[in-house]
Image (cartoon, rainbow, N blue to C red; front, side, top):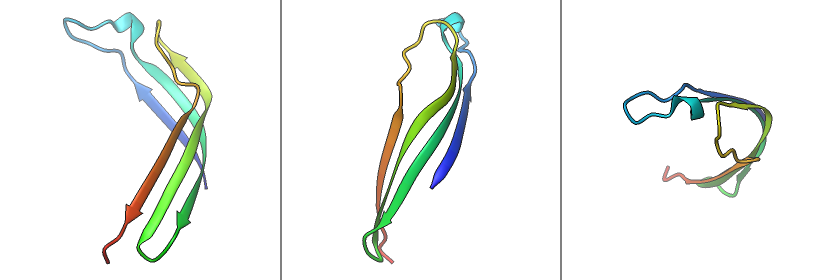
Length: 75
């Protein structure tokens, strides 16, 4: 499975906000795999690799993101 994942976060607002150091635009390519172990049990995992990252100001940014999800169906 292959996905493109885009996200946008606007600048923070409010009395304690720091608008110069908040907000971003990101685009990831995300290869993933889904495994079905039985009729009731499956799992999914993916790795998001940045293609484009633009943050405002000084922010910590993870070099990659990963997800692992497990599911169990009662029916």
